[in-house]
Amino acid sequence: MFRRNRGELAEGWYDPATLDRARQNFEPPSVEDKGRESPDYTQGEGATGSAAQETQPEVEDDDDEYGPTLPQPSSARVGFMGPTIPRMQDLELKRETAIEDAIASRGESRDQYRAELRSHKAATRHLEDEIAPRAEAGTRERQLEKRREVAASNRAFADSRRGDSPDGARDEDIMGGDNELSALKQEKEKDQRKKNEREIRREEILRARTAEREERVQQYRQKEEETMSFLQALAKQRFG
Image (cartoon, rainbow, N blue to C red; front, side, top):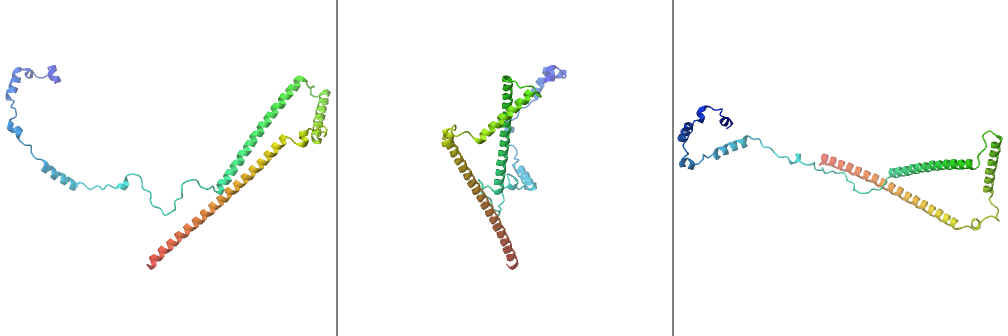
């Protein structure tokens, strides 16, 4: 079509007489040709199809090759899913972890207390220096100040060890007050908690030991059953 439109064909193709001759020579198909049935190829196709089926190797579909592998039945006893009783190793690990956490927490608290104490001492010293400046180091005045400080600290320590006089003591210190009652209650509650914790720990240890003993008995019975089944199979094989 493109060559014809661009005029690249021979001049005879563009002559009207050529078109008239082509129309005269063209013969439309007759009615008989239209009514003629098409040849039957089913017989040949059937033969070739049967031959192809005979020659084609049979492919067996193996269902086992598709999909996930099914679990094989096992004679071993499957344990039940769910929470289990902790063993002795688990309890030991739990106790060691709790001890390590307590030691770490105690160390952090001690370091924090020391840092706060150093900060408080530094602030107090700075305030004292502003109110009453100390004498220069190495002078006699500084030595006298040190002696007075040591004497004051010794006196305070002796007073705390000896205690105040009975006349100057408070009634709460002699008869006891609400603070002492609350302290006694707290001590009692603390002792009760310790007792409960010891009982809980003792129960956990007993449960763990019982579970381990039952597991050992179960393993022994399973091993004994396997041995008996093997001996029975061997006797049946020999004596029928």
